Length: 251
Length: 334
Image 1 (cartoon, one colour):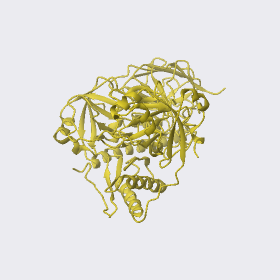
Image 2 (tube, chains in turn green, blue):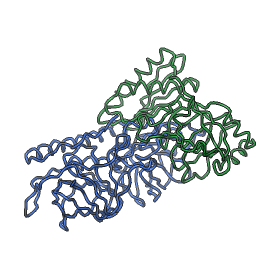
Image 3 (tube, rainbow over the protein chains, first blue to last red):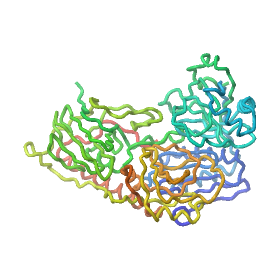
Image 4 (cartoon, rainbow over the protein chains, first blue to last red):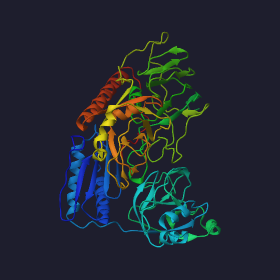
C-alpha cells in the first residue's frame, strides 16, 4: 500500500485488535479484527459511543456497522492524526475491560407474509430448498438483533434468520419498495422504513409505522442491540395493526 | 407584508445548504449542495454563514424577482446572469432593486449554479438542515410562482445610475477543465482489484444519464475485482468509487446511503467532490491519483481562500454599513 492507505495502526491483544486506516482525505475507518462477530460488533459500537462523546470539532458523522466504524470529517477543521489518536485512545480503553452492550429492548412486529405483501417469498423458498411455510417459520422463530441503522434512513439492519445458506440479492433491484417491507439478503434481515429502491428479496410487510417522526432525535425508536421478533398475521388482521407505531410494540 | 423572492421560472432549482451533518449513525445521508465550494462562496459573498440556505439551480434557465431591495451573489457553473436584461458579474455581490428580474440562462461547462441572498430565506428544516432528501420526501423542487420568504432587505450599494459596483472582492473561482480531472486517493480495498486498478487512471470515463445526487455512473474501461467473497455491509464515505457490476463505475455523492457492500477502489477528494458536483451527463472524466496529504493540502488551500474572502467581505460590508451578520444561527456540525 502507498501513503493513501498506508497508515495502519493496530494494537494486538489476546482478544483481537482495532485496526485504524485512512479512507480518503476526509475519512478514517476503525475495524475490529481477530475477534468473533459478537465481540467485533460490540467493540465498534462502544467505540462509536466513546468517540461521539469526545465531540471532536470538524467531525461530520460516524457510521458503526458490524465490524467497522467509519468516521467522516472536514480535513480543514481537523486532521487524520487527531481522529486516529482519539480512536486509538478510546479503543485501548475499551480493550482493557469487557465490552457490555446497552440493555436491549424487544420489539414485536406483526407481518403478513407472501402474496402481494412478500412477492419474493416463493423465490427465496426455492433458493433455500425450503417450503414457504418453513421460510416463514424460520424468519419468525427467534429474536433478531439489530446491528446497525442503514440506508435509506433508520433502516434496522439485523442478523438474518437461521436459514441454511445466504439469500442472493435480486438480479434487478426494485424501483420502489413499500414502507414496512420485510426483506432478507445474505445473512441479514431488514425492515424498509421508507418508500425507496431496493435489491433485497421481500418476504412480507408489517402494517406498523416504523419511523414515527422524521424530525425526532434520535430518529428511531430502536437502536443497535435491540431485538425484533416477527409474528405472522393474516391479511385480514392487517387493519388491526395498521397505522400503529412500532415504537410502542416492545415488551 | 413580509418580503419575498418570487420565482418566475423555476427550471430545476431547490433550496439547499451544506448538508445534514451528524445523522449518518441513524442511516441518514448527508446530502447538501453538490458543489460545496461554489455554495460556500455564494453565501460568503453575501455576508452569510457558509451554511445558510441558498438556491441550487441545475442545468435549466431560471428567473426570479425580489419584492424588496436585496444583495445577491451567483456562483457555480458559467452562465449568463442578467438583472432587468443587463449583464451583471457572477462571483461578486450584486445589488438588485425591488421588482427587478434576475435571470440565469445558458448554464454551460458545468451544470449547477448557486444563488445566495443576504440574510437568506425562511425555509423548513429537518434534522438540522434544509437540504432536500428525496428518500425522506423532504424538500421539494421550486415551482413557477413560488414565493420564498426573505429575512432581510439591503439598500443598494452600487452607483445609483450606472450600477457600477463600488468594490471587487475577487472570489476564488474554480477552473472547469475539459475533460474534467477529478482527484482521488487510494481506497481501502484497492488491493482487491489487483493489476486492473490502474485502469482508473489510464482512460476517460463517460458520465451516464443515470447519474444524480446519490451517485454518478460512468462507462469506460473499468477495473475488475480480483478477490472474491461477500463484503459485509459497512460505512462507505461520500466520494467512494465502487465497481458494482458490469461496465460501469459508481462514484457515490452526497445523497449516498451510508452503508454498502461493494469494495471501495478509490475515494474522491474533498475538492474533487465539488468539481464532480458540476459534471453533467455525457461529459467525460479523468481521474488523477493523489496522496491523502496532497488532497488535504488542496482542500485547506481552497478553504483558506474562502476564509480570506470572508475577511475582505467583512471589511467592505463594515465600511459600507451593510448588515452582514446572518439572521439566524444555522447548525453546521453535530
